[in-house]
Length: 216
Image (cartoon, rainbow, N blue to C red; front, side):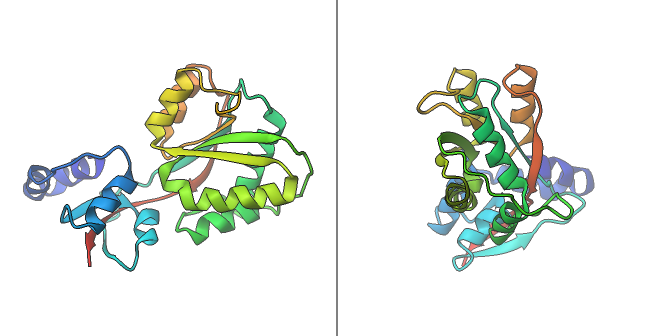
């Protein structure tokens, strides 16, 4: 919607035509991707990383830079985490050279100049990471590599950033399935949690961009 708002300033006629053809607003980009691949819809707005997942089945249309939106992905350990040390180590790994290389492999843009190699540290234990759906493939690999380097088991829960934020607000912090670390696809949701006192601060670990896709 933000892209269309930006387009309306330079080409209101085209923006109106597109808006009249919106037939579905999905909870997350993976749902949009599925609808385009299955040809339920003719086109959809997704992150370029999601388009990359189905690159053999979709055509990608670049959105002009002047109207595009470049989401920044924040990550942080929850204040009431059961294991803040392990959570902080996970964040360090995501921000490290190794973590950034994994993210780049899945199409993410690194915001970090010259990331440093991760210094392995055996810590054991287990953490629960809530992560945006667009991070699914990258974070599954990151979780496995982190486990190898630290001995700390990583349980991952993927959903839309808004849904995950609401779970945290509802008390899903710490414990067997509550979050220790939150990785969001939107600054908005992390800033809300910061304002509400669930996190102290956060780090930007990746950037993305929106594209339009159509089925091949």
